Length: 383
Image (cartoon, rainbow, N blue to C red; front, side, top):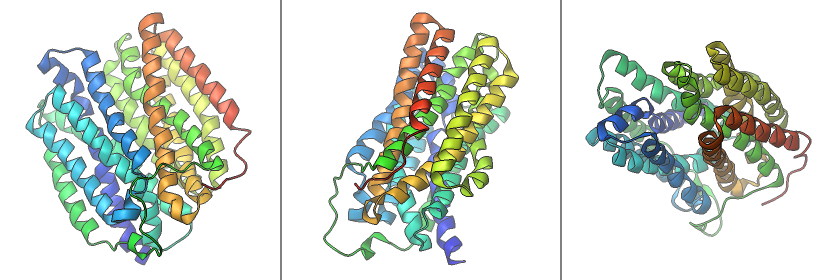
């Protein structure tokens, strides 16, 4: 009972923060049309999210050890609200770039703190229990935001949908709930932690990070590249559905992943990822919608089910207790590198050589990375 009393408010806050990340996604084309700009301007604005994420994960992974877990979560909630409020006040591409940067910073602070805080709140050294709460709540949030906005737009075409003020109201409630949570970082003995600390990579954590890098690269491709591929077949209206399937449906597979040892869960996810991407790529190339949707669902089971859950639990388990926040920062650092860098190069290939060649190149990269990871990552090393 005590576990749920503390875990539920924090899980709600994590869901609210991640819901704000993609809340504006269904309106990107509308913003571009209003401002008279093309896809490139929207893509650049979208990429500012990673610009907000990376500096935090690189330099401030141990911030919550210095100022407290609760304070960091409150800052992340305020940044999430700021991003939504900015788009509510000024729904244009320049504001989108700034909002994405702010949302990235807030998500990075949350990512580096959530697992350690959850473990300390529920009073357990079992990393899988905390990872279950964190992955479930964030998986729901990432998909809930765009789904909620899309639902609102079905009833009214507007750049200020009701989902925006609803998110602000939910953020206010989350702030109140987190404010009442106990602080846990102050219980740790010893000298104050340094505010600026680099992410901590263990050998096992690097293996888990490489797995999530491949998975989130696939998710990034579904979000940013797949709509263009579907548009060539007159199926662009289904890109939002494929994005939702690729993100949120992984939650359905997390109960199975929880029963597995983290390493085994991650390996199963990697094995699923390859046929999932093959189905996605073939569906996008041939214009077969069923294959695209089925591939998105399978990719979600790997990316946000088996690998996300297993990797987060395994990363925390491989690190010493004082270094878990830094280890989590390292894990999410690799995840967000995957979310951005491979997708950018895939887009460049698509522009110069065509979409089929780009999809094939990404598939070769995915195959090579998976082949390298599956036999490795047996023993952890200390930070």
